[in-house]
Image (tube, rainbow, N blue to C red; front, top):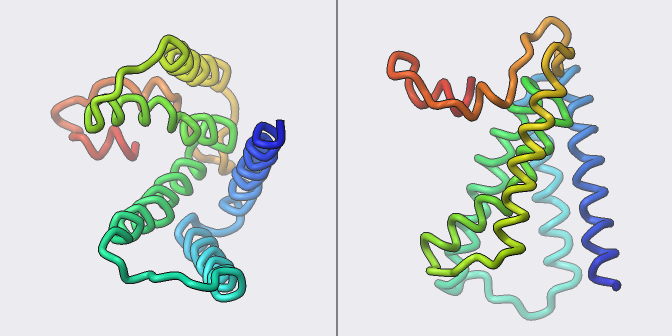
Length: 172
């Protein structure tokens, strides 16, 4: 029961962060917000390591996996999240960001040879269904910044045209 409470508590703070990020990108550009976010995260992480971890060997070769994850998740992923937040708003961007389990299933099948369970497949179907439902409900509503055009999730999910290229589908 405690594990479920902790997971829900963490989920609450992630949702609160998405809402606050959306409020922030109304005032400043997403890149300055990203730099501020990463800087504060780095300070708190190093304070935690220095104060609470007694014996840690950061320079083991196996830690290179975590270095790579540390580059992609806080750097690249948050850059894309902040950029998406600027264009889509908090609700849709949060839903797309939290579609991670869907990608985890596909990546685990491809790289680890795992076989998904029925609950995994149903969860993935519900994630995709939720994203589609949010896309339908967002048509015609205001986007994150006043005057910015509304971008539907369907536009993000449809195949790329050859004249616009892949980049325009990932970052419309």
